[in-house]
Image 1 (cartoon, one colour):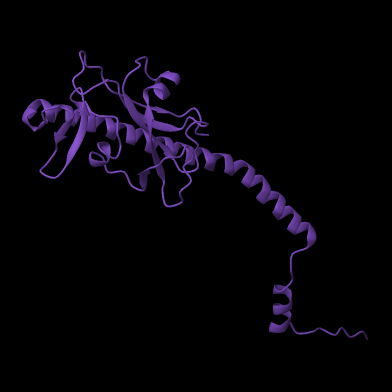
Image 2 (cartoon, rainbow, N blue to C red; image 1 turned 30 degrees about the horizontal axis):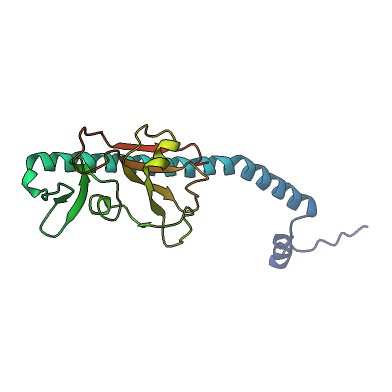
Length: 203
């Protein structure tokens, strides 16, 4: 007569089975799958970041354009708030902005910093936006900068450019720009300001 020794299936056996690790093949398969997923998902994630950046810049452009239109309207309605030289306009008892041709001057600190409320932004003196405390940098630019890039055909005026952290203003076209094209506060012929974006170097 044959006897078979049946061992009871205890909790100790269950624990030893649960603690069984992955085999080398299983680990390799997991790594390969993760690699494929990251290769597919990463470009889409980068595109989403770029889309968000461009959307922010479009919103900035709209805010600058709205601010310019509002100031022009206020000057028409309240011409007495211009000074005698017509190069400053009183927004309030405490805030004066610079103007040219009864339009906001192409300055950041003296004009648009008082007109729009952008977060984590400051005027800088470098083409590189590298200050980690900022999301956006602003740099003043003269007429030649705008003319050389084809944004204006007039040899007059001045403006500023807003570009994101990590970008170089002169090497990567990824910015919002504003230029008042008038050569003086009281030009013979008033030229309209230009507000635009350039995304060609944002990727």
